[in-house]
Length: 215
Image (cartoon, rainbow, N blue to C red; front, side, top):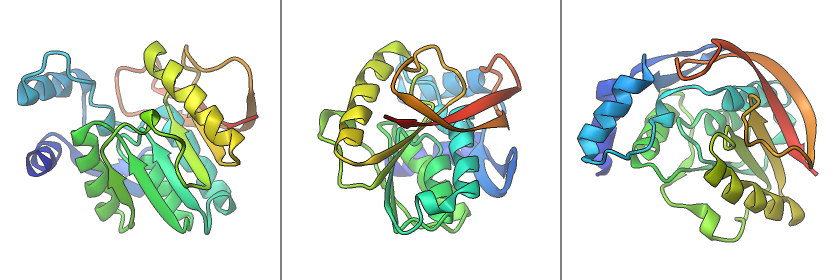
């Protein structure tokens, strides 16, 4: 599946600068719905996940901006990028001087996209393709979670897991553009940015992306 996923990503995306972060380039798609249909055909699964890996989402963009402004947050530290998607946050962390970066996502197309995007940006990181939420929080010093509160079921799993990680002394940065299932309590705003997304699934082309710490 790895080789075919890599070929699929290359066939359906173009390597281009990230809006607002032009020094970074990602393999991005033009439209979400046609690509989603292509994923369903490729996998034979009508319930295949949306191709989150093919777009730069508001929460991830906010984290990437924050790490560009505050590289000391991750410099010299072990970083996990949870639900990595395109690898945007992982690549930003590597660029900010993280000692090591691991990107995790359950979607095999995401795993392929992260590897391609890391190579395109000359960044070294590890990519794993399994569900970490069934495990205890990992041996990391910082966890990046960009746009993980887009759906009720996933938010209900990921937020308690992030809180457990935070309770163990792992610093958690949560990036979000005001999703419906973002927790209403236990967040401390660190920064906000005007971001420009790359998908018509968002209700506005330009959004505000927030970066939060868990408390």
